[in-house]
Length: 85
Length: 229
Image (tube, rainbow over all chains, first blue to last red; front, side, top):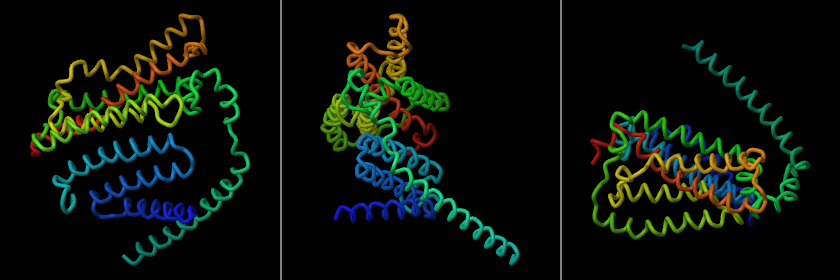
């Protein structure tokens, strides 16, 4: 049971990373990166590293995600709808 | 064209092969690592009694290796100073223009105390359980950002922003000078006082981290916010 959860987290992590790297739409890439950070926090919890999980969720996903989203929106004018390009 | 396509294919094959070899080698090393995983865990556990705190990561970060943490705080300060100096043209007084939405503002007013309470909780339990200054600061930073963007708190009208930004570095500096003045090594806290010193430094770090992260997000876009409604 718990193994299948771990496997699901790993598969999600890899596919989110690939998606964040290769999506055409930078805005969606940024959102995927945010979700990637949250899944990474789950992975840290599963590895028994709650401190790192907290830091990852707060800074890796929250702060860096906000900064990247802001950069994307600035670069492409309006990032809310279709994307910057 | 055909030639470049062929080159690409060849390069792709070479890169894939290199990745495969590197991956296999790393995997082999990783399997070997499991046998020697102890690392410094037992050393830290043995010295935990002298650190003044009961949570090993906190003991390492704020006592055994506090010099590293000090420099991390300096890095954060340097980052925010860099962003602020780039935004200097409009100054701190032109941080992102808040939007006035009454419902949003009321909601944020309700949520903000809870967010701050959560941050304080993380800070308070950081000496004995997962938590700590940076995490607490990040959560309070999120609250400050919400409040600023909803218009219920203007960060740019906050007095003494610079004083708060340097609080973490200054807390470390005071502790360092105190240990030197007492004839000890740099940042070598006496066991009796170390709990109080660590909590003091953590409060400084948390407060300055909160404002630093919020200012980083707000001030990093001097041009885009003026024209966005």
